[in-house]
Image (cartoon, rainbow, N blue to C red):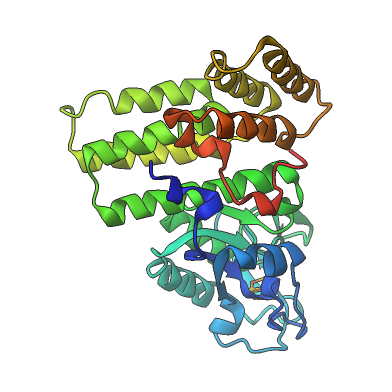
Length: 324
Ligand code: SF4
């Protein structure tokens, strides 16, 4: 894995779709916006956001009648809140399908929570008795996710959780690297190198999945390279979708410590081991032992660790590991 492919060094060429109101665009039904400081200020330094407002795109205008989901949560209708005769179900679906067919360039998507068009999950659906159940998905978001099941997606509200935020941004970078690999030409060695570079990142999510992914690449005679690659990335994105845990991070860092055992004296080894253990006990955020490991590996570089995405899954300036 090329070092310049890692999060820290990636240029701002990664494109991420976003509900337009989150960027501060005044496209809401009431003429307002829902600007997210994290998205509009912090992440714009790293990603090129591509905004979509499905309700404006289907011609509802701004300001407009608010809509809501009604009926069966699996196949709801989008109707006017005050004017139920206003039904925009099909236009929203059609627009979602049209966009979904043209976003291969995106490496992630951030949706506005609770929206009958953009909400990713737990959107209110009003049944026949008029009582809402939080069981729906926005009609636009549904089409994007259905067509692109591997695309990292998240809602802006969930990005307030440090663990989910860290996880989502890391997945966007992984997916962007995967697309870059395909663009540069899929080869057996490129696939094996990609997997090697992601070893410890996957292990922080699931040791079992790391082994399974390795197995997938152990026999290239069982299927075509393209089929193996398709299965591989599907399993990888699924594995990374499960949040990493403190216990698994500890396990990974103890493995990393092993690469330094011949370089550190006993006092430094003990200090590093104690710092990792203090992280395990919840006394430090992840950034503390990681920075210490980075410090030691900068003095004692190891070629295998240098290629590990785990050491730097996203830009350090975003401080995503400071609260994880
Ligand atoms: S949630 Fe979606 S449809 Fe609603 S204003 Fe934002 S971008 Fe437009």
